Image 1 (cartoon, rainbow, N blue to C red):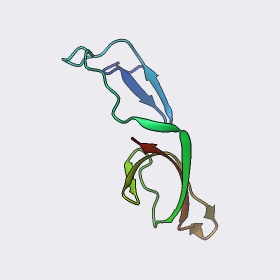
Image 2: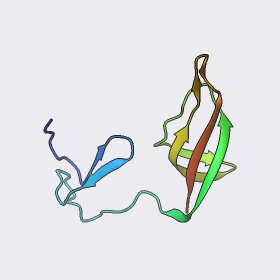
Image 3: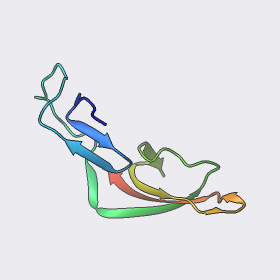
Image 4: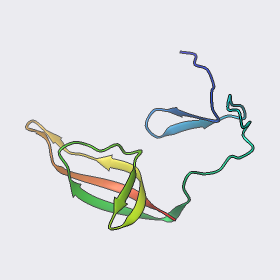
Length: 93
């Protein structure tokens, strides 16, 4: 389905995005900055207990440090979802 391009980054699905050279922002894109700078050379894997799956696009605070999530893995059986979740994260500088 066609959709309007209203910003430089268009998110399509969970981990897919498109970057365009046009936007409807009033700043006209002169102040484009990254939200977070990541330490991309090291991936961290944490296991944790939760009743529901948290938003993987959120900023996570783990042991006083900030992390961005790459993915969260949950196990489902006939009895429902397991409380033990596993996540892969990158540290925010």
